[in-house]
Image (cartoon, rainbow, N blue to C red; front, side):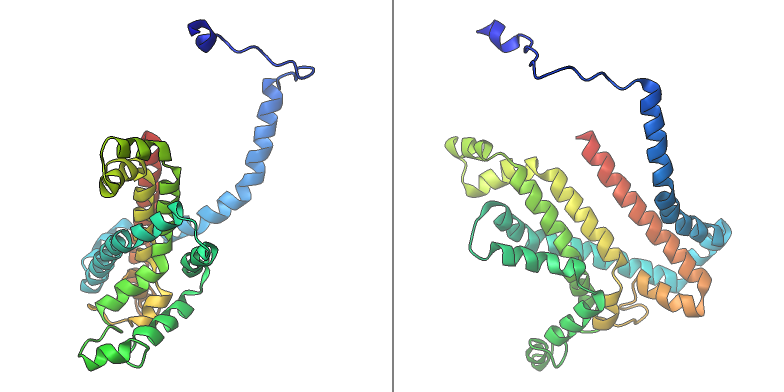
Length: 282
């Protein structure tokens, strides 16, 4: 029996063996692939390089001390962190539902979750305003209680949440679906309850997917503009995030816009690189 398990499998005789491609031929094919890939790589790289060449390190450091730049960075980081946390709290149950349950309207729910990804951000902003604005479906009731959401920091978080949360939900759902049900059943046989199985088995085994979803949500929230400017406005020190400060700076102060653009590119690049490094390590 032991010899049967560890013995080398016999080759299948399915026809004449295909001769391996020699090294020069393989290298030539790879060279053609590189040549065909260069135009798109150059197109993606050129605008980024042009942006970095337009501002000097001295200008970048000097602009970082500007109160408006610091306020925009602070508001963006704070609201994006709140958005990522809210995505985890409220998006995880929905992700688990989509990964583990079969129900009649599942395709409709999945489409609804994915819709903000392809929806024009301006349309999302108008929809949020119609829902939570002073004359909106819920906003009028909240306004009667003295609660105003539109054009506040909370509106920034809600706009980011609406646009960015689908990235977390889809990533988390894929992670939950990849967990072997047998492992969860084994934990159940050992006496673990539903919450214990989820906390001790499902979450650890899907941590890479959850981490990816959180970081992608955070990065998308940092770059959100269209829905935010309509629903939250562009008020410096209150709702002005980095993308909105870039929009304003493009007309009034180009160096400020370039500084914030470089910061956003750097943060986004580091987040994507971190995701790839963490996933490859595990």
